[in-house]
Length: 576
Image (tube, rainbow, N blue to C red; front, side):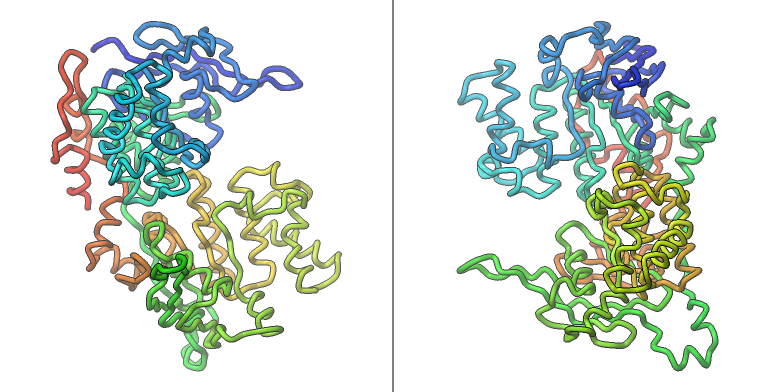
């Protein structure tokens, strides 16, 4: 075996605190070979991002390497000053951060930001740098590179911004690229294109990749070796096939059990809730919690321009006590549809009926009653919870707003809801900033249940959570639905989660529903090309022989361009 490109040896990292240094990474050792993809996996707080940041010398304020070595081609970088590390960043180690919004300067054009890498390292004159910037933008698949170079980050989509970050990371053809959750905020089809792009660039230049991720589906499909971290240490590492097929540690087995994209889908079968199971009662009831018919919504783009039709003749139904999912890429119209259902957006045409009652024309007191019957849970619980209020105050707030009960009864109701969503009673007096992401989402769910709604709209409610936390939230939603007969409208781009949670599904593309029906039927035998494309893009466990030394360039031979029949693509086709 060739000498490792990156070797981390017995690394300890700590953060300064008033009580003394707090160690968050301890005795971490692993290596990355030239041209190899190694995935660093684990939950939030496991230490994986801190470890990768230490390699670049980019620890947050107060962070320090207490012990160990970080060797790049045998040279220990651990003791280097920030000034000295400038010669390594970009030139020898590229970095792809998770969030392109905060990682790109909003007041500088894309081309200028890409040019910085060449300018800082003295790679060419002004004309040469411009040519190389345009070539980079073309290579990462952005159309009209000359136009994109002049645009600002807000003028690009999320996937386009992430491509810009990849271009920046590979601009100087580094030996190693550290990709920190590079696709966690992207739709499955965009995610696949981004990961394919990283694969192509890796093969072209023999670049090694340290892939930091909590998505075991991505790790399984793209990495040759996996390093599993928990509580700041390594619990298991080895070839991807060995770790995922026969995990030695209980924590790894739990991660695999919770990762929805790695196994066979367990589809839910629609069944009526308790109060509809009696045939005579069912005959007298409207079986649908929600009916949407012919919804249309257009947005003006300014004088002289055709309006943008975000929702185009959308119709679907949600059976009482079941979950209906709307899936599609960003811009497909699914969130606008949800906002129409919640009466935050007024449709230009069409109607929404809740329990058989049309809601479009509701006003005054009737509209206020509707607000009690429909509640929302958003993607980002931290942004949707008041940081100044305690958990108990947040959950009781809807009751106070509607004048339900007195202060004592509202507090009692809040405590009951805290228990119902399986939160410790002691959290009642804490504030959102003191909670984990999963705990905050449970608070958001408890608040949504306070008014005993008929319909709960979940807008990407688990997409920002680690797989283990996500699995617990999904279990909670299933339990609450069974106990309370709740109906859910579930908005998501994660088809693996949808397969587990939803009874029925509508697939949206460019504002229209292209396919719909029972989830098992739609996902098991998709009729539309777009549905098949979405399903094919879901990361799955790849065959062991599809990831080996043959998939990466050797250190002694030139890298060859990616072939159309790359192992990753072949495996995806075989599993589709």
